Length: 306
Image (cartoon, rainbow, N blue to C red):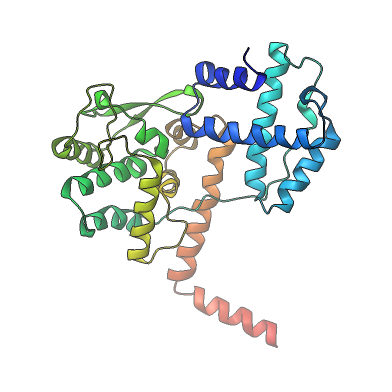
């Protein structure tokens, strides 16, 4: 007989259609919570505010960031909400399971020049030409279409060649249409011509050197190599290219709701974070380029010392 844990995981797979990475994270989060309850000799269905707070305390003592703790809380709440709806745990209301308050965070974008340089610098790396062509295509999709890394690597061979629009299946199995600029189409076409593998329309679009599906860690390592070579900050990650896509569209006059649709955000509030990025970038540009900015700082300093 399937356990409540397995029933919930099956629901996430078949109904929510979560990607493998999300399923792994949710599974680990629930296993940690269940292990905590077992250590307290508390049945799953009798968990209370007391057990929850002791769990949060143990996570904090382990040095987990508040963002990581918040994700774990979201996983546990999802498990119990499903339990309430399905009748597994009808008497447990998980509303008391609230994550720690998160500090206001601003997505860290990469400048237009650095984003372009990152993609161009791939050709200076060591390795086969077909690997470089693949990497250019992947990063072009992240920056040119604002895709999550899981969305780019989830593309099938049958999705290419790519036309003016691309249908993407994002979080929760939600689909959206994103426009594809010429530079991205050309990069993917070049990859199709160089790719030494073909597993048919249902096979992956992007392959590893061994012929398997390319994984996210390989793209992360690529970005680590590139940012070291170019002397960029640690926030220059694959996901930062998606942030940059949104930030640069907004700076160019893009409509906030249109950008929300392109990114696949469920909430406009999530997209609105990019207005703070745009404002910060404008302030930096103003301070560094306006002819009176330096004088204003000097006057301000003199006022403090007088």
